[in-house]
View 1: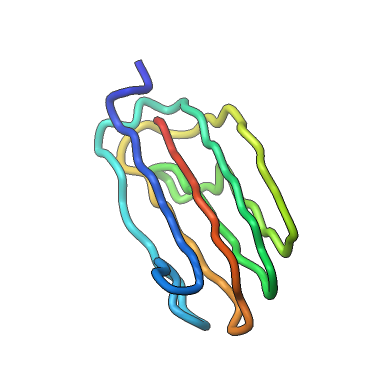
View 2 (view 1 turned 180 degrees about the horizontal axis):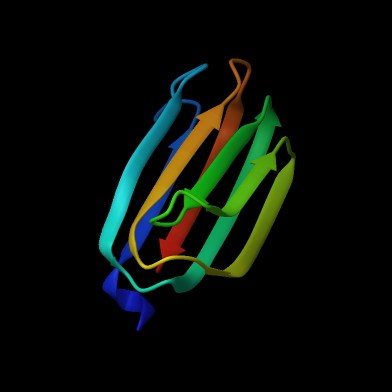
Length: 104
């Protein structure tokens, strides 16, 4: 049941989770059961954004860098159960929007 731990990350050039030159990070869980799904979409006018999902042991189970103009994908992911970490970073010249949904 992947509905136990849904998480969403949204960012754009006005309201962003990743400040210029910095990494935004949060934990999700502890109910991640070791498998799930990510959905990523972006519409980038300039610069780039990177989103990363790590499992309870710190292993990267998903990472995507987008530098435009449009990106969309959905992937199944697997990793260690427990508390997972979601992070987002972007370059100083970033403009556009991105969204990451994690269901673990």
